[in-house]
Length: 330
Image 1 (cartoon, rainbow, N blue to C red):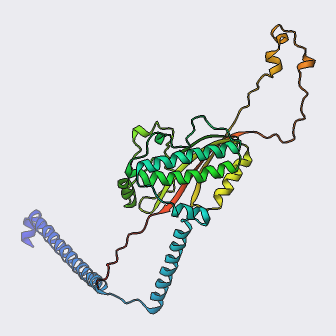
Image 2: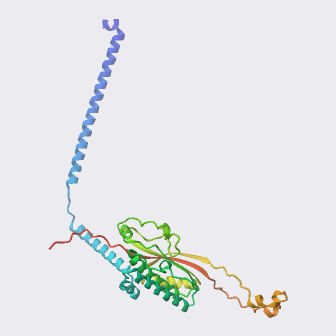
Image 3: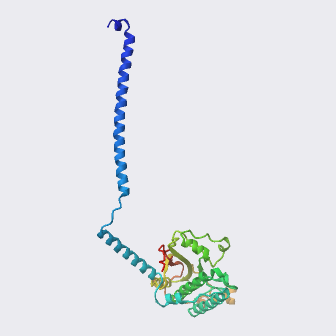
C-alpha cells in the first residue's frame, strides 16, 4: 500500500494494463469458441451436402408412369405438327411428288413453261401484267440457276405457281409483282439447321427486283428448329380479291402462313373524253357542252375502290431433329 502511495501513477498503469490483458484474453477466448461452433456447423452442412450428392433416389412407379405419359403426348403432338406442316390434299401431294430437275437447263425450261402458263392464266382472267413480267424469276430468263441452288429454286417456283393460281382465281385487276427470298445454298441450309443464323443477303442481290428480305421481326424462322421460305405478292384490286386470297391460304393446303398485309389506296386519275380532246370545236373553244356532256350516272351507295395490297407469306417447314440413339449392331 505504501508503494502504491509512493508511486501511484506507475501502479495505476500496471493495473490498467492488467485489466486490458484480461479483457483481450476473454475476447480471444470468446472468438475462438464462436469459431469452433461455426466450424462444427460448417462440417455438419458439408456432410449433409455430400450425403445428398451421393443419394440417387429411384423414381416411384407413379412418377415414372406420369413422365412416360407426358413423353407420349409430346411425341404425338410433334408428329401431328409435322404431318400438318406437310400440307394436305392434291396440292400438297403434287408438291411432294414433283420430280426435281437435275440440270440447270432442265430447270430453265421448267421456269420458262411456268412463265408462259401464268401469262395465259392472267390473260384469260383479265388481269393486267407488265409486258416483261416473269413472276419473280427474271434472274433465270436466259439460263438456269447454279446446280447447288436447283432444289431451292424449283421449290420456290412451285410455291409461286400455287400463290399465283390462288390470286388469279380471286380476280384482281393487276399483278404488280411477286418476289421471293434469296435461295440458300446447301452450306447455308446446313448452317441454319445446326442453329446458326442465316447468312446475310449478298449485296449483288439487294438490287434484284425478284428478291426481297423479310423483316426479322415477323419471320417464323427459328435456326435449328423451324425453316421458312418467304414470298411477297403485290396486286391491285378490290377488297374482295384480298379476302378471297386470304381465305384460300387459310385452307392450309400448303403450310403457308400470312405474316403481313399492307394496303395502299389507288388514286384515280380523270382522263378527258375523246369527244372533248379530238373535236375541232374544242380546239377553238366553241365546244357545245350540251352535245359533248355525258349523262351523269347514278352514284352507288357504297362505291367500289381499288387498292394496292402487298401480302407477305412464309412456307413453314420443320428441321428434322437429330437422333443421338446408337444404331444397334447385329
